[in-house]
Amino acid sequence: MKTILITGGAGFIGSHVVRLFVNKYPGYKIVNLDNLTYAGNLANLIDIENAPNYEFVKADITDGELMKMIFDKFRFDAVIHLAAESHVDRSISSPMEFIFANIVGTVNLLNAARQVWSDFNGQKFYHISTDEVYGSLGATGFFFENTAYDPRSPYSASKASSDHLVRAYHHTYGLPVVISNCSNNYGPYQFPEKLVPLAINNIRNNKPIPVYGKGENIRDWLFVEDHAAAIDLIYHEAKIGETYNIGGHNEWKNIDLIKLLCEIMDRKLNRLPGTSENLITYVKDRAGHDLRYAIDSGKIQKELGWKPSLQFAEGLEKTVDWYLANEKWMKNITSGDYQKYYDNQYVKR
Ligand code: NAD
Ligand code: DAU
Image 1 (cartoon, rainbow, N blue to C red):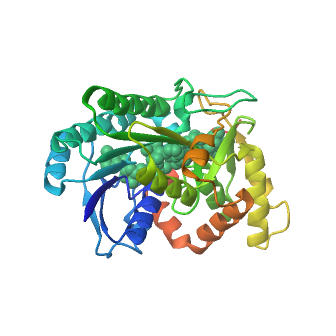
Image 2: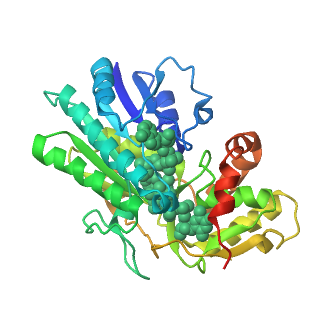
């Protein structure tokens, strides 16, 4: 039986990857390692928590000695590394947490893998990264796998740094690595600090929808299960040393996306058309706000036959339905300190 370590499996994307691997591959043992930060939530995995091929380990990747002990114990055949601090706004207010989790944490895992995989025979260290490492685009153009790195926030700089270290361990020590860089994900189980679940939750509760700057920044949106499917494919098919870009070819100006969400929410909540749009509130812009991200995913499409399965309107409807059907999940994570954090966050323009 292959034993695969998935880090950050209690978070948004990680929980979808864990669920997919546990259900699809009963012959793999999946170990989910996560230290359960504010973004980690075992309720995301309630449907598979008793599966015979699943085990949860609560541990912090910034503890290098602990990582070596855990690798020694489980002798993983592969690592799919998602654990990270993931929110750009938090990286602006608390950069050091991103340096520790995203850079030091990744190096600890690389060192532990290197120590246990002395023969490098069939193992794989798959590092999950972001399109933000490539910087910001103007009105035209796309990010390709060979686009030069140009990270511009503490979050993207910490992810770029971890990507460089993963590649350095491949070139220097021969560690068998693969990397993918994905665009903005949306879907069930996303923490409501990110634009889509934050807007859904605020509309549900008749609260202002904060739009940074003029709402003209552009992101390329991908349904999270399509990202998980790409990770499955890359894990199984990619050659060692390769990088793949993953994206939806689905660019939206923030303000247009929010207006579409308002329209869907009015319909689902039986509110008069235009009710939710009244909640749109322009607030102070994010410092150093990247203008546009757009991924060219031609390589994964051509080489591995992946493509997004959902149209955006369909994915967004599905997402809204999930959040409306799971209000208890939302209530549980938005109690406590959540409101205090967000009330301080937004300065009205
Ligand atoms: P998330 O914040 O929802 O989840 C991160 C998980 O990592 C949480 O469960 C958290 O508890 C865990 N974690 C954080 N620090 C840890 C530590 N020190 N030790 C152990 N566990 C720790 O993030 P997400 O949105 O699911 O992103 C997952 C990965 O995918 C990240 O590496 C992120 O950079 C990358 N990514 C995200 C997106 C996106 O749109 N969300 C897009 C591209 C790439
Ligand atoms: O591109 C991939 C990245 O996408 C991932 O690497 C990150 O982990 C993930 O958080 C996401 O980063 P963004 O900064 O693009 O996502 P966020 O949801 O925070 O913001 C999306 C856009 O919406 C961005 O232009 C900022 C804007 N925004 C965001 C929030 C939370 C608002 O206008 N208002 C808001 O309240």
